[in-house]
Image (cartoon, rainbow over all chains, first blue to last red; front, top):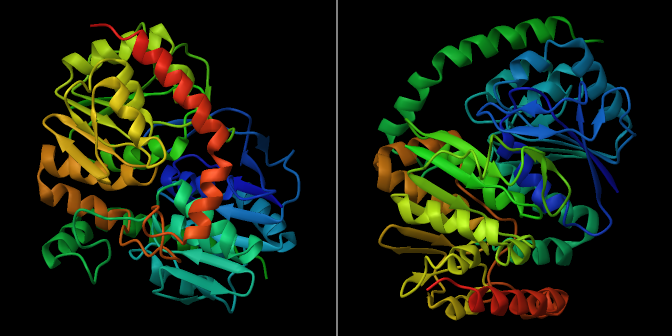
Length: 225
Length: 225
């Protein structure tokens, strides 16, 4: 079972590193990190990762994993990333989008007629790619796994392992990574966080949302049929 | 508030990348990744990270963060890592160990007379460094924050942000990373996982535990007074 992770500039690294920790511990899984070039790739907060393949050299994969983050807004209007995601996403047995990574799946035409989730702040944008937005943290539609924002990728990766390797494999990894989460506060979604916290995040993220919305419009207009 | 993350070969990357996602989003926080040299550092599963400082060039920090992983067994008997951790850990306002990262804090003499946690499989080893092992997922003793295995670092990082920046800052980050976790299975600790899963992990990890136990003995014997 070979896994290709997309590694683009400005990704939110926990979208990738959370699922990676789970998937790389699954029996028989091998992993590549695919970037545009062989240079290190910088995440939205600055940490740099060394890719193992480029989009020109990447092998086919059984599972394609697409993280999100601010860099998604560039990736969805980048013909190279869109073509790569489309090509690999069509041939892979499974496709896994985390956070706003689902927008790139959408731009690649992989979500038409599908139910899909995304970061709660970006979810409604999926409809512009012909998808039905889901407010599930973990959304499964056939071979397509899409998770909500950032940390939901960890939950979904365990579900993917359970699906592909059996529940015991997933439970073993859960014990290994001591995943019995105890957030110090209730919250984490617009429904569970305090209204003042939600309001502040909406204000803080408004400018980014507008830029993203414009990028999604351009990406939707450029979609292959 | 400057944060130095230790970046040693063979670390478990989610020990680092989980807390990094939280801390790097806290207001006014800057972050460095400190390795022995400026070469990329490989985690236990293969992904490579580019350091931003070396142990020779690293600035002092307000918060020292020490991840764990199989590489801990080498780091705790490496005089360079032990000396660096001791020097930075003594001057930092706060020290944060995740998973078996607490063993390196122990080897550096920072846990004498302190309560500290670690990955559940390694916890009892802390007593050899003069610490009182705690079975808490999040253990706070004065300026010392120690978390249980891997994913507990995310919970603890939110607690650290709450302590240093106020609860509202932590709650905002929790909403941003959609951290309302829903593991697909119960489990994640020896108490909550099924007995057969615990038994399998104990067997699978026995050889590593024995190597680790020997490394801890050597590190404890070499401890500075």
